Image (cartoon, rainbow, N blue to C red):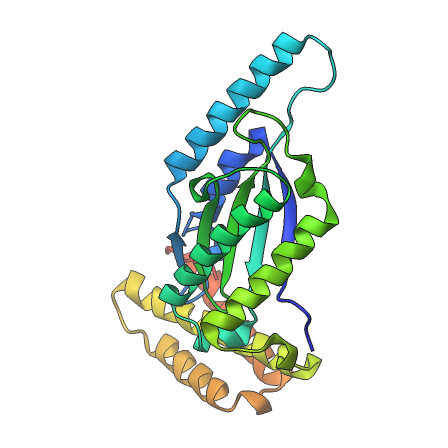
Length: 265
C-alpha cells in the first residue's frame, strides 16, 4: 500500500537549468525513445525563463547594492518529478494529465502562499512525459518577485505538502484511491521488464526494414518470434531471451561489416 505517489525533488543550478529543459523536451534523447512516448510542454518556456532572468538580475543588483559579501546566487529553481505507476498508463489520458498539471500548479501557488510567498502559475514550468509510467516534470521558482531566495521551499513540510497534494489531485481526476494501490511483485516487475525489452527489439527490427526499404525474411521471422513470446510472456525463459539477443548481435555485427545504417536499441 502507498501513502502518496512518488515525487522526486532536486535543486537546479542557474548554469544547468537551460540544459535541463533542453533534455526534458528532447524527443530524440535515448531516455525518451520508448514506444509511444509523447513529450508535451504544458507551459510557455520563454515566459518562464524570462521571469527567472528578471529575478536573477534583481538578485544580482541587490547583491551589489547590499555590499555585505556572502555567497552569490547558485540555484535558480526546484525540480519535481511527479510519477504515476506504470499500471496507470491504461487509465490516464493526455487531457487528464493536463488537468492534473493545471490543478497541481494552482495548488503549488497556494502552498507558496502558505509560506507567505506570492507566485503565479506562469512562474512554474511543466512538461509531460507520457509513456509507460506517465510523469510530470515541474520547475518551481527559487526566487521571489523581489529576487530574494525562497528558503521555505527547502523545508520538509513544503515537499510533504506537495506529495499529499499531488496524490489527492490524481485520485480526484482519475477516480482512484492510492490507499488501495498494490505494487507489482518482484516477479511481475521482471515479467514487465522482459515484455518492454521484447517490444523494443520488435520496434528495432521494424526500423531496420524501414531503413533498408526491404522486408527481409530473417527480420520478419524475428518479429513473428518476438510477437509469440509477448503473447506468452509468463512463460518466456532466459534461454528464449538469450536466443533473441544472440540474433540481435549477429544482425548488428553483419550490418557493421557492410557499413549499413543501424539504429540504436
